[in-house]
Image 1: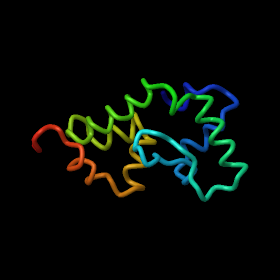
Image 2: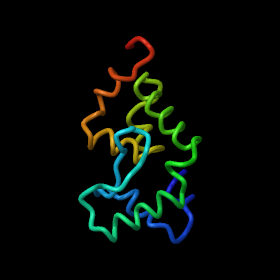
Image 3: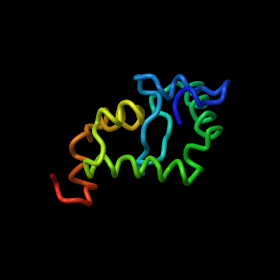
Image 4: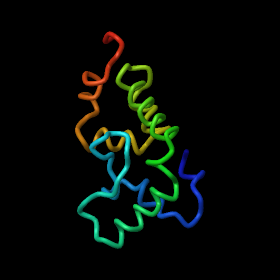
Length: 111
């Protein structure tokens, strides 16, 4: 899903900005609003997450997991993540996991 695929009326611009409106939750493939947001923004972001079924659709959750696994296994580059999955790329950087995730999740031997 890209920005262009999102239904009108969603609070989606905040999901894609480089500001800290959302984050990957403790389970790294669930999305939740940042805790430090004002209540009205938390509500709007929550409503968008629910409306887009980002945490309810197992296919979307599995896709996020697969993408991170591909990156950890070095099947795709960080540039690919930035271009195709900007939210995941941003979160890996923001959480300091850009390189760490490779050792945590790698299934293939390092190349």
